[in-house]
Length: 228
Image (tube, helix red, strand yellow):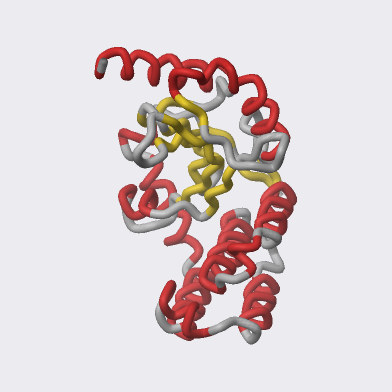
């Protein structure tokens, strides 16, 4: 039974990779690609206490101190919904019954292309769409993560007015519940100052990304770039 389950899961992974050939199998349920300063892709998350899975679109940073830190928490974890607006819950043994629908929904709902370079506008559109999520609206820590992502994308690309993103973030922070923020990120002032330091030390930020990309686990992934 265990062997049969492994075979089914392997086949499901192969079907997802056939549908998105630009992605690479990082682990059996993690299909990734490096794009600029991020790892993006699709995760097929097993649901607890059931032999079913749910697909998510994910974005991870590559600028943290090491690969483990980078993969600890996604910047973006986007659930995919069926045509009725409900979360997918796909039994492994009935995957083929759902796959055409889930694939159609994935292609519509994942706002970033996997088959080419990505622009700053693509990232801004994605982040702005995430701000509409009801859970993010209620969570200043997650809002801060999205602002940080916008800022560090502009910094990575060497955008001339990157400072304006910090100013927007500081303005928005006045509306946040700081107790909730601090439970997520600690002191706001320290967190904000760490971003200001990254602005001053951009070369170190870029060097860390390049170093992480040399990790043997990442070198097997396909790569694309981000563009202004």
